Length: 227
Image 1 (tube, rainbow, N blue to C red):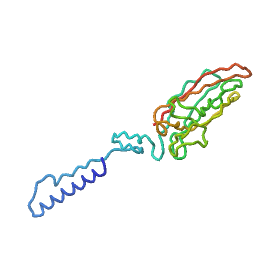
Image 2: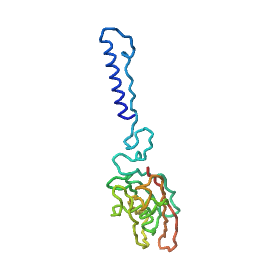
Image 3: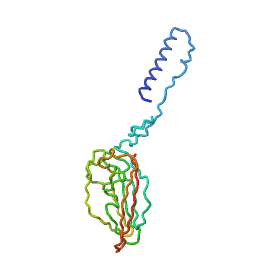
Image 4: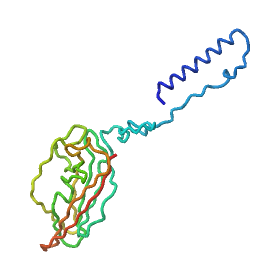
C-alpha cells in the first residue's frame, strides 16, 4: 500500500473521533460503539529485500532483479560440462557476481594438467575463454583489466574487439595450471546492457602429450545466468 493511502486513513480516523467528541460535549450520553472501538489501519507488510523495483507488490519490475547499489544484474554459474577425455581439466568460477560502476561481472577459467607428462594446449586464448562469445551472441568474455570501448555503467561494447589470428600454445608440466580472469561484456548491438537469461560458452581444446605430434581434441563449456 502506498504512503499516500496510509496518510488518508489516519486523517479519516482522527476526523471521526473529533466528530463524536463534539456530539457528546452537551452532556447527552451515547452508546455509539464506535467511540470505544479502535480504528483498524492496514499494515504495509511488503518487503523489497533490498532490491530496487520490487517491493513485494507483484509488479514484476525487471529492475527488482538488480542488487541494491549495483549497476547491473547478478551472475550465477548454473552448470559446466564434465571434464573432457583429455589429460587436462578445465574449470570455471565466479569472482565478481554483480556489475557495478567500477567493474562488470567476472569469471576465472583454469586449465590444469592432471597427467604425468608435459602437455601442450591450444589455442592458448580459447582454452581460458578469452575473447569467446556466448552461443546466444549476446555476451563476450574479455581478459580482465583491459581498456575496452564500452558504455559507462552498462558494460556493453560499443564496437567489436579486434584480435590477432595467431595460434598460441600453452605448455603445462604435470600438476601445473594456467588461468585467466575474464570480464563479462554485452556484445555490440546486443539486447540491452547485460541481457538477462541463461548464456552458454564453449571452447575447443587441442592437446599434445610429451614429444608426440598427435593431437587430441575435445570441446568443453559452461552456462551462466544473469538475473
